[in-house]
Length: 124
Image 1 (cartoon, one colour):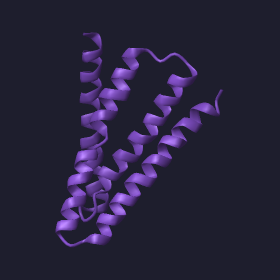
Image 2 (image 1 turned 90 degrees about the vertical axis):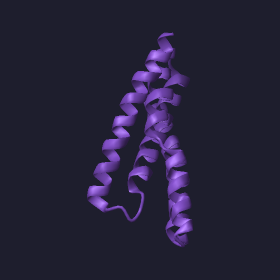
Image 3 (image 1 turned 180 degrees about the horizontal axis):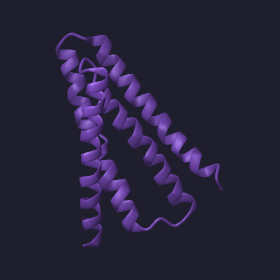
Image 4 (image 1 turned 45 degrees about the horizontal axis):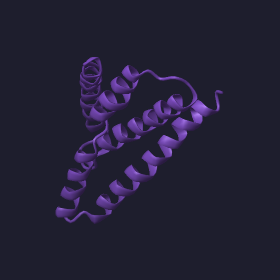
């Protein structure tokens, strides 16, 4: 039961962060491209790499994994939003932005997982 509470707490924090980041990115860059979704996916991927690597090199409690790995990152990263925004770009005929959205989210997020792992592994 405790892990469910940790997931809920992490999820509420992640959802609020996602909302604030999305608002900020629209204010800075406008709404023509889903930069907010891109940024939360990049940040979430980096943090996932850090959490995964920490779990490999030290004991990470089930509570921390539930709080950060499932709750916070599950609510922060937005693959369903990414998919919807990409489809809307395609349906609007903006194939270049759709392709850029797909390529940037996939490539940058995989790289950020790697970078997060390397950050942890280089410290041991």
